[in-house]
Length: 191
Image: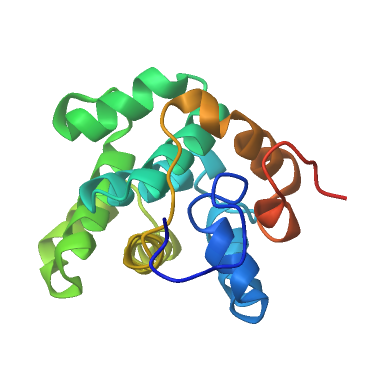
């Protein structure tokens, strides 16, 4: 049970969707940020940006955000969940581009502290072909997900177990994006 009364059935609105229903005026800008960072046109594919979110959420041990964004990444990456699991378990041996590995190292540094992002990490990402926009957005995705993870866990929200529990929200996010689709009850499609 959440630490405060969100006025919802937590199993119907798990994780971040409960607090977003509770405070729709804060949900709107948070969803807009997620939409821009994770789904808007970009040189990094949406699946890779979702992988950054899942990676940071896993490092923060946020069950809901890690499971949901792992599912969102897997749905948008050709290699699916096996790749997501491999990246989360062993970044060094995961079969990803050197550029993505360098960006994930930056994201991992941000997860610890923004001050852990060094000129060397940035230079390595640039040497692997990362643009300033990709470096900027990696840092912002990582920082935003530290905030989202603490929002979800700080309120003690419910996190369903098992990847099947995230199938419907994955379909909604991939099809409709963040915003109204992300706060629909489980099992309902967005208008």
